[in-house]
Length: 383
Image 1 (cartoon, rainbow, N blue to C red):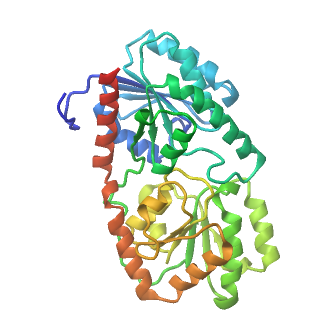
Image 2: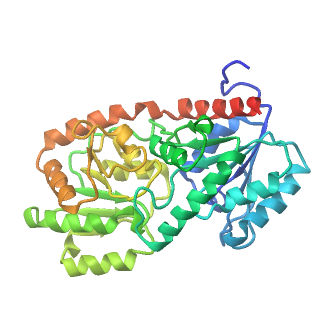
Image 3: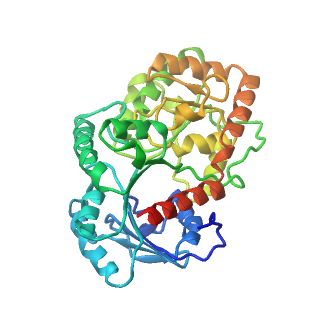
């Protein structure tokens, strides 16, 4: 088969088992934008997602249908088995993909559904909870479950899609054959949206974008900002995110006496508006303990906004420390020092921002998604 183009006549059907129910909720997310391009390579895509109160079955991009579960996530394997059997009775599927994380309900459901069926299964692994660090007992339990799951699935799945080198290395240590591991990016940047814009007066000194959860390192970032306030009393941290740690954050902010230095930004509904938020910041910080491909860092870099990140996921492959961004090792004092460095030098911020913008150009959406589809068609042919 010759290399695919998005004008090629699609011939195959794909069944996706996803952990992301945003498309079933009608949200404009990165997953929905991916499907807008990825769907061109398939005759039909059906997606099974977890339940959400506002989730409904719907058709997107003409040939993508999403089917949310009607009950709790704990019963997702049962839903995958029942709904999958119904779909398989209607049409042939040439590939099944399983977004595997947590307690691996998608993978368990996939194995149950595909038992004795000659349809290849690809396990998609964006990150492994508790790796490199487990921040609570739940992540320690998930890490233990991952070791057992991948030891078994390594023999049963046709292939594993990982989104950065570190996940691939971890899977290999868990018993997955190296020949089955395929590194395919999950960063699809639309550079017509995420691009540099000249804004002279930045509203925020430091920007955080992400869930307010323990693995996102937001409490560590607050510790660093408290230190920065000692030398930069008017520094502003803007937080765009929601989550279980919101009350804890507000208590720590009050106890640290930095209420005037921290503001919470409202939810942004449109991609264009999120790009504008990046443009209003002097820098973005990612303090996560575990990530696959932290999209917000790449989006900010595409906008020529300097990024300071922990070495999670793909970040060590993207950031050359001190050249096109900064890496720090989960230490609040180190993070504070690097924030001060960028705050005090406008020229350095511009240089780092421009270098970062150049470093992420290979994540062009059309190219990355074409390579993604071609790799999956190759696996279909091989099986």
